[in-house]
Image (spheres, one colour):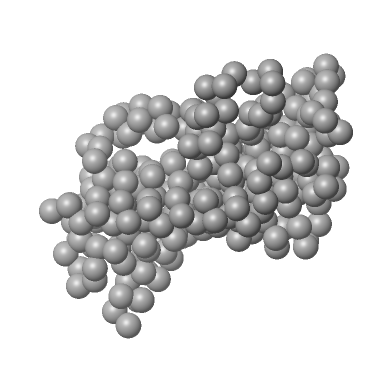
Length: 253
């Protein structure tokens, strides 16, 4: 009961902190809107991807980008909690380090999924063919994606001593994961360099974006993998990162 209450309390704290930051919630509309309207429309003038308009193609990728950037940003909470002494208080609480990590991870993942949901709603406003059933299908996929990505952020942040240091490492991780995931351009085909295809196989976000495309685009998207395979890879990645994150929190004194 103590462990469950501790996880719930940490989860609720992260949710409340996110919902009180109205500036961040409002600003979360603009970055994906810029990608979809300006970047997507601009490229759409010059071509398509298969039978899809470029805007249709990048829409699942922009959801994946939002999940990635938001999840990694949430790692800052560890540094803030350390600065204000809250981290020390929860580390001496009578709950396991696993429960502490799990509570923060679940809270931050919920925040990231809310951001992803906002992008989904933007797709409706832009005329994308979306519906409630589709959202209910991508929701568990978004949750799975954020588990691993948030775990990366929390793990990295547990080793950082300043916000500036974390910002540099965050960008160093975010950009390769994003650009090599197939979010903006196809990563398979004769014209794609072999090294990009090789690296993309090792990129967990590749499978997340592909799973989102399978659900959102349906038969219009010819995936190299099945949805089950993508979800399996994402799930295995989540388990590995949660284990690493728990060990990272366990080393904190």
